[in-house]
Length: 109
Image 1 (cartoon, rainbow, N blue to C red):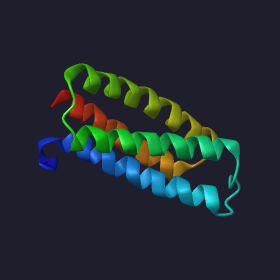
Image 2: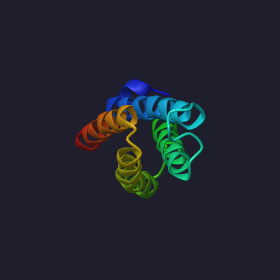
Image 3: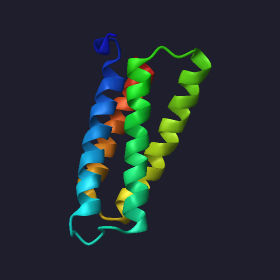
């Protein structure tokens, strides 16, 4: 396992993990969106992005599976960022923007 082999995906995974932690705090703390369906959706989205990033960094998948996960990550970034925007979860949105930049870097490298 060489995490340094995938610097863009590693940065993406770290950003998604931080977004997951902040979204979990938003979901359980009394910040105005606690316990709502939208917060649960954004929490699930950040969890799915983190899990996909860990899967891509830690395992060797065939080419078609890597492409499938990368397309799903792109769709997940769009949907989860939109949910964070509508929830006014600005820290989560900023972390997802960082994750998007890291993901684009991983596509280029």
